[in-house]
Amino acid sequence: QAQVVESGGGLVQPGGSLRLSCVASGSIRSIDITGWYRQAPGKQRELVANSISGGSTDYADSVKGRFTISRDNAENTVYLQMNSLKPEDTAVYYCNVRGVTRSFRGYDYWGRGTQVTVSS
Image (cartoon, rainbow, N blue to C red; front, side, top):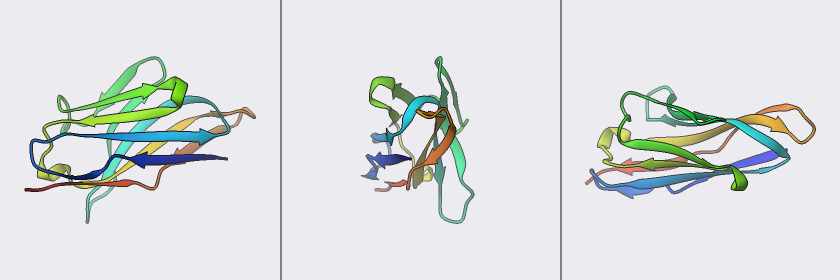
C-alpha cells in the first residue's frame, strides 16, 4: 500500500506564489504519471497539470505560463509551482500518482487535497 500526501497550500494575495508538494511513500517501484487537479466549490474536479515519465508535461489553458509541474524521482515527490495567482485559482488541489508497485501491480493513488485560497 502507498500513501500520497500534499502540502504547501494556504492563503495568498492575488499575484502571489505558492509551491505545492506531493510525496508518495510505500510500496512504489515507479511513478509513471503524476498530476495535479483542483476542485473549486460547486465545480467539477479539473486537471491542472500532469507530467509523464520521460519529461512530457501538459497544462490547463487557464494556468499555462503561470504554473509549473516538476518531479524529484529520487524522493518520489511532485511539485506544482504556482505564480501570478488569481482569485479563480482558489480550490482544493489534489495530487494523483500512477505507476507500478514493487510487486509489479499498477496503482492509481490520490492525496486528500490541500486548500489554496487567493484573496486580498
